[in-house]
Length: 159
Length: 159
Length: 159
Image (cartoon, rainbow over all chains, first blue to last red; front, top):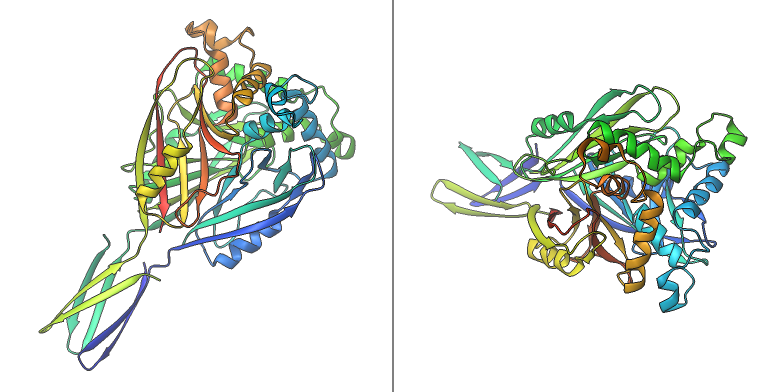
């Protein structure tokens, strides 16, 4: 139920209505260190969700890029090496890419990996927090062949 | 248009405002039977969307776990075997995992598969229903190496 | 802040409240040309977001199908060939599929690929636009073995 209130003064009514619906848009800047750098952005996303003041809703973490991706994983040093090995099976660096033949930018495999992992993940916001699993972190995957300055857009809708 | 109404009584105004925006959060419990169990949760998600009373909006189905994933597929006994075969190509069970060398929990491949499939899918709610394809079901993939008790969070925002 | 207003006339108050929350649902029809046709739907999605009038919010692009998928990529002729090569590694056309043995519809690999790429992507709407990367387009992947008439549902929630 939305909160409402009134002030009656002489022949005027002043009304306030709090529909408690909020949209909140903010960005995180991430400097990646090079190809297959995996960055844990969980605390930053959680902080932005807190700043939004939203108690119940959705938050989308989106990377505006075609050679990076967003997912969740247990962020520990072993898996940080294992995930790249699987990406190499999916789109090997040494394979022939038509993208390379056309543009000579050496990152055909980066584009293919990014398209298959995907640019965004949407999370529930429950009681003002992200109900992540105990061993589940939100990560940005740098898939391009060199260090990049990345932006993540954190978009909240809720009440 | 939001619905509004008033009660005027002596010098007081009582107002109600229905902004018709709803956030609704609920959970499904799923007992999986073991590695590569695939569970059709479509009817359960549809029931929760109905309970929300939302007519138009979004629903995110999110698994708070790093060794399970959510996607859609035609849920039939053939594909329930074919999907695991592709996951085995992506992250073979017998490959060497740094996660295994560090933690000895025998599920490095589970983590990698989960990170690549992803923990959530977001669906439109149109006229109170999920406009799924005729042969499209919402599934939870158990990717860990043994049976688990899983939670799915069903988060609705709409009106 | 929601906009509110009043008309006082004799002993009656008429109130209007605009909560400025919008849900907007629309569809795009796409005629695909055959297996592994990749269609750039960015301009169409952007046009629908503009039509919604939403300034800040979320938009989900969802394909109601089990043999098609939605993702983002740099849409250029090289990558349009490179992405199918990776899908062939993930779920080769010539592999044995239980789906095929049961249903003889020759598209077991299509189903598996679609389940792994996923049926939807959610984007932020910021200042009425999609903040995509410079080389990032929204694409529909036709993964079935013949040309199909596809629907994409574009679902907006915001204000």
